[in-house]
Image 1 (cartoon, one colour):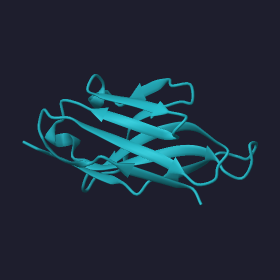
Image 2 (cartoon, helix red, strand yellow; image 1 turned 90 degrees about the vertical axis):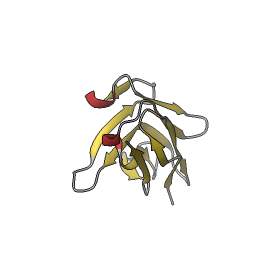
Image 3 (cartoon, helix red, strand yellow; image 1 turned 180 degrees about the horizontal axis):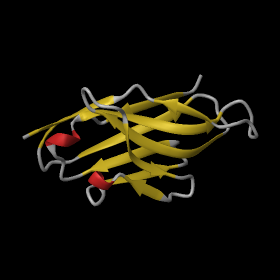
Length: 122
């Protein structure tokens, strides 16, 4: 069974930093793109950042220059370094991985972590 497990969330003051981690475990053949999403209370889940297997990255406009996504393919782990945090960054952050689970040629599927809470106080 494939699992994505996030860690690193917490409470931080505005202007502070946090580093989120998400490790994939279980049996799978490959991970292509990985991403971080977030969902604030009363709002839809939104894309924060993506990273391809070749480490090309893309960011939502409101986190550009403050957040950095990276990955360690040997550890099947994706990270999100969040600097200069703002109260509006408060949300549950979810890890997403596009993975081939059944065979090296199977159609990739989306897998999600359980989420980790990030709270930024003003």
